[in-house]
Length: 283
Ligand code: C2E
Ligand code: CA
Ligand code: CA
Ligand code: CA
Image (cartoon, rainbow, N blue to C red; front, side, top):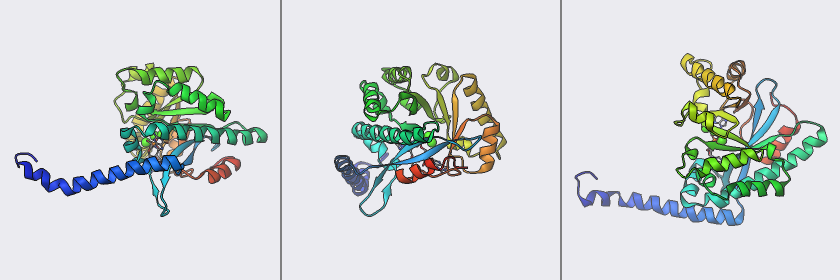
């Protein structure tokens, strides 16, 4: 609208209004979906790079529509964050995911195989909530899941919180035995000394870096460096977006522990994930 007078803004009015109407509709749609329980969790396996055993699953939320289409999280999580609706939605996600992991681990126990971990994404808003650790504790107790089998995934940017509540919450969680993953690592602004002091035990290398492995030498060198730093801090390393077996081999050779990506499986519905889990390893 620079220098164009009040009419320029009017020129955008219809589109702006349409946008506002759409997000208002989405907002009340989110409320309705929460009330009706129409969200769904998909699960994507996180796999040991060396032998293909399933170490766990990441829960990824979806919003199925009456017409059969599915709204991906990128299209409603930011809105839910902005409106605060992420708090009740996040609570539902946490409860559903921990409950599912507890069920899976009953099966695993009966089969005499190691339990799986469940990774749950948490938003900045949830992390800053002083009641968050208690909420996690209650979810674990109600599900009957040992804290050692829950991983909370937090992004670097969600930890930038002036009051420091997010970090205090993560510290409380790690002390109680819950694992913390630093998600999308490399895309934020963390300095290395900051990383040293964070209450995290796992680093997830963002897909953007994994994409260049092994063909782009500079990208590959960077990933190798990240893995080296993680190892020197005794952090576990998960590579995101592993799509080819060349990537898998290169990442394993560089010392990454686990991988997640289309090479192994796409995020899938709970019954499919259960079948995959019972089959043992994926590749
Ligand atoms: P994220 O936490 O980085 O999740 C990984 C995303 O990469 C997922 O997208 C997953 O489907 C996708 N992905 C996994 N492997 C591959 C691969 O090999 N190739 C490609 N191209 N993509 C792969 P999704 O499920 O659409 O989720 C997008 C983002 O939405 C997530 O990124 C996360 O930030 C957010 N999100 C998803 N579920 C939740 C949730 O339950 N709570 C919160 N707060 N955020 C969530
Ligand atoms: Ca994640
Ligand atoms: Ca991620
Ligand atoms: Ca990512």
